[in-house]
Image (cartoon, rainbow, N blue to C red; front, side):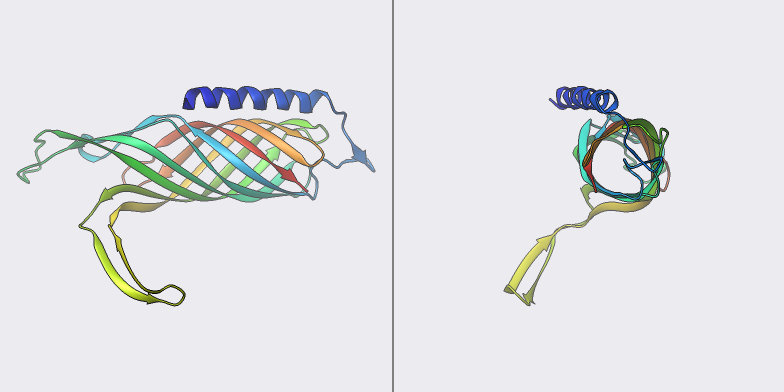
Length: 232
């Protein structure tokens, strides 16, 4: 289902990009393009992340599944070619982890254990984009981003904990939670693709790549990014 959905989105976006590039002539004011210059945009990016295998310490492995993340983005076009902004995106995907086990604490491998779970990741990124064609509704572009990613493995680090308190609005309340393995890491990446501008909205479709700088490894996550939004 995820593969079919990804293919349909890609075909639809490619058609819209082609229409945007051929059905509209450039609009100019005083010799300058008015498509993007000094305009803001708000968008909802869809990130199709390809499944990948991540290597850990001691030969442990994590096999991430294909999945789709989404988020919100804002950008400001300094001129028709350069845009700066930020993205906030979220991804929740399943995984299978193969863990090397040391049962007797002698630093020797005593076998493996396989567990399944779900990974939640939230990223906050500053972005910069260069649109290669200044006076065309269709333009190739390259985009770079860097920021932080918070990842939660949902693997418990201890027993459930709970407490009760007086909430200012809800009154006396009791809650329970369980600590899990999580980490906030530096992350960066990029996108290369095509963009189509209409009067008040736009489409972008591109191939993406992301890196997350964990403590012992910086895995690469390939994917496809569809970005749909308003420009104003």
